[in-house]
Length: 255
Ligand code: T3D
Image (cartoon, rainbow, N blue to C red; front, top):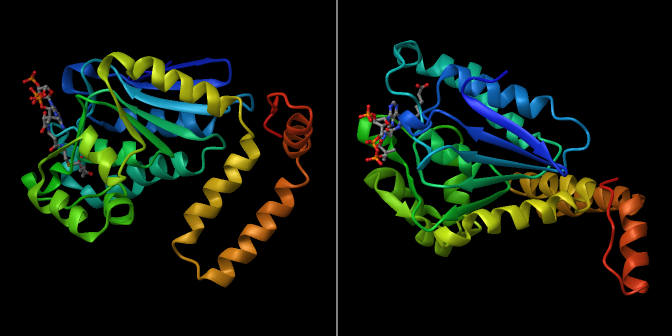
C-alpha cells in the first residue's frame, strides 16, 4: 500500500495521484520511491499513465522540511530523483501530467518530464529554485531550454516567477491549458485516446524524439528507418491500414 501517492487503474489507464495535499504534494523520499516503484512495475495492460495531484496543487517540489535531503542534495538527486525521472522516460506507456494546480521547483520539472502536459488554467509553473539559492534540477535545465528557447528558459530560471498555464501553452512548454471546468473531462479524453492507441508505435515515437536532440540528421534518419521497420511489422500497423481501407475506426491492441 502507498502512503504518499494513490494508485488506480481502469480501462488501460493507470492514475498516480501525488497525495500530500496538506503541503501541496511536496516530494519526500517516500513519494519519490513510490512513484519510481509504481512506474517500474506497471502491468502489461496499462497503455497510458496519468500523473496528477490531490487537492489544490500539483506538486510544490522538494519537501523543504526534510533535513536529510537538504544535508546531501547531490545524493538525494542521484539516488532518488534520477531513478524517478528515468522511470517516467522509460515507462512503456505514454505519460500525461495532469497539472491540477501550482507546480513548483522539482514539482514543475516532474510534470515536464511527462510526454504530454495538460494544465488547468488556474495552474502555474514556477522554477522556484533560485528563490532559495538552488539551481533548477530534476531535468529542468535540459527540458526547458529545448522547449521554450534560451530567452524564456533564462527568464523563468533567474526570475523564478510563476508562469501561468496559458503562457506555458503559448510558449510550447506544455501541450494545453484547459478551462478549470473542462480540465477533468479533457484529461480523461486524452488518456482514453492514448490508451486505445498504437502503444508500441508510441514507444518508438518517444524514443526517436528523445534521441533526436543528441543525433545528427544521418543518425536520426537511420534510427527512424529502424524503428519504422519494426512498426511496419506490428499488428497495429496491419489493423491501422485495414481500418483505413474499410473506412472504420482502428481497434489497436498496442502490439
Ligand atoms: O535534493 C534536494 O533536496 C534538492 C532538490 C530541490 C528541488 C526543489 O524542488 S527546490 C524547490 C522547492 N520548492 C519551493 O521552493 C516551493 C515552495 N512553495 C511555494 O513557493 C508555495 O508553497 C507554492 C507556490 C507552491 C504554493 O503557494 P500557496 O500560497 O498556494 O500555498 P502555501 O500556503 O505556500 O502552501 C500550503 C502549505 O504547504 C503550507 O503549509 P502550512 O502553512 O499550511 O502549514 C506550506 O508551508 C506547505 N508547503 C508548500 N510547499 C512546500 C511546503 N512544505 C514543504 N515543502 C514544500 N516545498
